[in-house]
Structures are given as C-alpha cells and as structure tokens.
Image 1: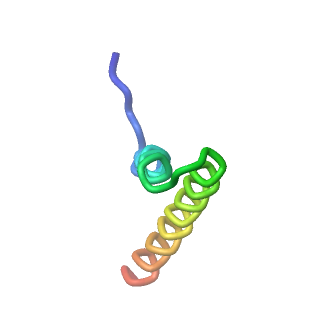
Image 2 (image 1 turned 90 degrees about the horizontal axis):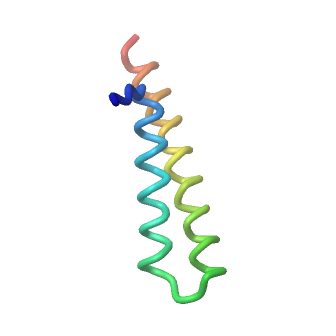
Length: 60
C-alpha cells in the first residue's frame, strides 16, 4: 500500500506528531500537555501558512 501525501498534508502530519511529542516530554500534568500540544500545533500551522505566503509573494 502506497500513501501519496501532498506537501501540505505531510507538513500537517509532521506538525501533529511533533506537537504531541513536545507536549508529552515538556509538561508534567495531562492538562498542561494537551494545552501545550494544541498551542504548538497552532503555532506550526500559522508558521506553515505564513511561510507559504512569503514564498508565494517572494517568487513573484
């Protein structure tokens, strides 16, 4: 079985897994882990769109 992901889907998947790991290894309580994981995921998504627009506008 072969999985074909677009660049955007791969970046979202990376963001999701990285946010989960960061939340688990950096915080002590479950509530803090979930909140920090969601915060990291949101930051990754904002950065993804921001950098995407910068590349789009910079390409001319």
